[in-house]
Image (tube, rainbow, N blue to C red; front, top):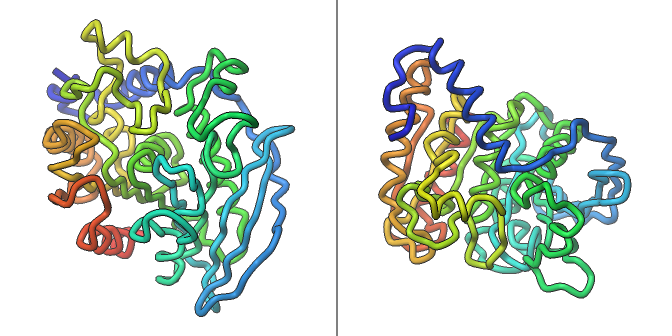
Length: 321
């Protein structure tokens, strides 16, 4: 049973929060202590009706740079911004930009049309960040060079740089930042809102079930086979759960966070357990005076973002961001 089940006071939560953070970070692996300068460069830009799309790149360490699509709506000042995390697709950033992949996941273009500044970067092993000679999602080169890290930890660190970029973008209100993602992108979105206090609002679609009720032999491994947490498989085999969905949701509190969950998701088992995770985590939200800021919206459209789910996402950002 989760320790949240017995939580009764804010003083108890303060101690639990530190413990949860430590447990998650232990699975993340070694992270750098400081972020460097972005050195953002605009490679090209195209004007569309209502917004401009820019192709940008920026450094995340001395040698490595990330390529991303930045959308800026016309004629507005001090607007909120949304980081759009792509799912496990070899298209990487091009899918949320609406240039490839599933049209319903073109978040960056969609929210730019609604008046938000949006950013869609490539994750490691996808898009322009596939290692030479390897297929997308092959993390062998990364783990060879970084045996003490995890892909999920690396993606969290990279997405913090993406938030840096949004904060530095002209006309962005850095006090109103959100994140959205589907599948692998949902996992990235929730880790980001849990560990980066600059992110105020999160929508995470079809990314989760509780570890304790996950029947897959290697949980937290997306359908593409990407190994997110190298240590986790052996622990789960022994019935040990260093953290679970409810702990992540609690770490996000009081930031408004919505799960969008398919009850008939063919890639993620036992998604009904998300309701239980939200129930546990809501104890923390209530103690912080934000009971209405945590929600699990369910549908039966399979592992996808259906139109009603996208509408719920739109309303969530409009309400809280």
